[in-house]
Image (cartoon, rainbow, N blue to C red; front, side, top):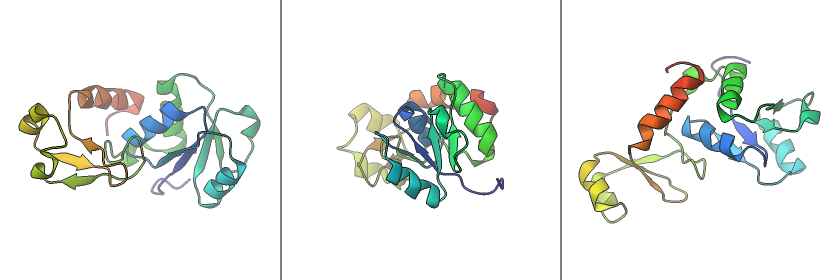
Length: 154
């Protein structure tokens, strides 16, 4: 796989946590809550990699079998296989909807976030789909540390 090529994923019903972490890292990672062959065919025809725990899919074109239960090991394996380290864009996608976040003006979130957050944070982003508001709270440092442990700093 060419290293400059963007990689998009479809995670099967056993990999919801993995989908969320791929999104946190900035990757397009759809989640499939139930086994759906039509969705998988559509995904692979569009160039998505289907991530699955089903070992019988190991030789299927467009599939990657995730054979570890540990989230850190799963991410390390995927990052190594698809050369993702340099493509990370942490906190650029909604971890719920998988949509790219957009920056919003400080005053736009006044009534949408807690007063303390509004008074202590300068930058905010919003999901255009679910409208969730994001800011650099205390969880960011822990998330960055986790991401850095996957395979080196960006």
